[in-house]
Length: 211
Image 1 (cartoon, one colour):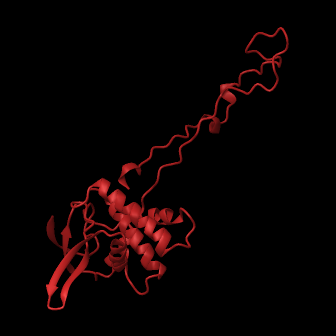
Image 2 (cartoon, rainbow, N blue to C red; image 1 turned 90 degrees about the horizontal axis):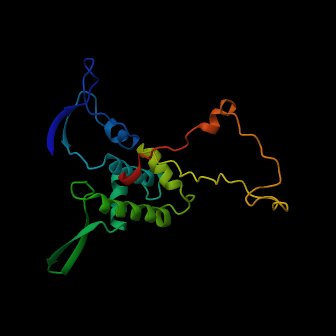
Image 3 (spheres, rainbow, N blue to C red; image 1 turned 90 degrees about the vertical axis):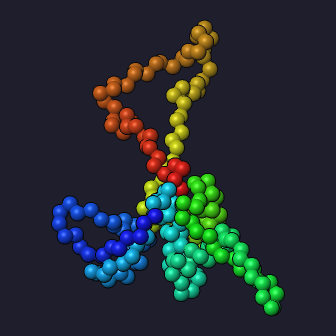
């Protein structure tokens, strides 16, 4: 972790390297910083940037829907974490008795491993699907969140069909087993096959375990 003093400004020379907003989830917060203004930034390196994008995109989806009234994505995130019981409990004793207050826990990935976040993210998606935005078509919530976060998903798995043609008619008497009475079709000329027939449809999945 490092505390840095940074300034929002245009690049001053070719080849200059900086930190940039590559996801629309954080564009609104970044735009609120005035040009040529110094800000203090706490820089931490997450285990998975995709995880952070997905979580905050989900919060932005809730905030933009207006279902929680006039709240921003940080308010929506706190509400969602409370609903998902990602909290710790603080107990205070005073004259009126004992009071227990839930405090949302951090989703920084220094404090959560991949397995814990996977469970939390699935729980949050379920809560949004069933309680917060129940009128959304099935599957559209995850698609919208992935699009907002800029996270691509793997292509659906292609099922390979059998290359053995079905036997429509039984073999005639005297025909050897495994043969048919219909004439054998000539083998197709590879030079005349269309590019679509020979195209490899397998695609690499870059989403995988990084959800």
